[in-house]
Image (tube, rainbow, N blue to C red; front, side, top):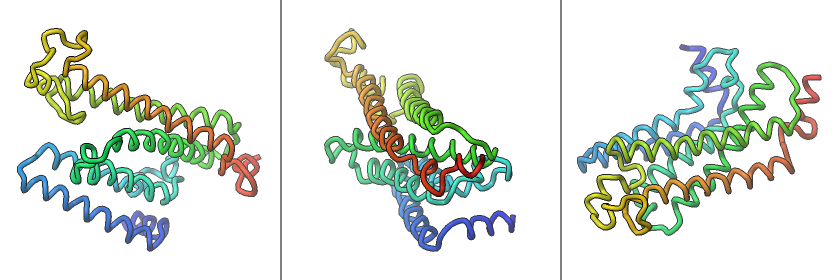
Length: 237
């Protein structure tokens, strides 16, 4: 355990530790806030996002041969603000409703972020295995990583809300029944409230793809791990 903590301390900068701590404390406050309000579902959601803010530390628990141990601490600098913006900003501060397009912007950023993370993961695997790989294949894998992760989440949200009584999309089957209008025709009625969850899912998927393609093009232009003196393919010849 001592080795693990030393790895965390040496593998991250002082300013990062302070930055992470501040964000996590604020996020913990949102859990307490929802518990006081008696909203257990949102408190649980906030707790899940708080766990996500420890992603890098969790990855450092994996064996040395795991590619996750090759990932740098700056991964968490971006992940933690993403979790914070989605959970504290979107739910606790109610930005999903008060700021037009907030959800779509989050999904565009998220789709792009997962391409970048996918690129970092592929590069980490190269470092672990000390092998070369054409940058085009690495970028296609990164794009695929984003598509799988971001859209798998949308499928989870839709399924969870429609069949298990959740409200992650803020418009479930039960809410549609309460609204009443168009329920008798279900998804076939274009004005039915039951279609709103489907519209939300498809809109989010489109935004995920837009963000992913933008970052994919950016990495195609400048694949920073496969360029210049730090070109990984030159290191492992």
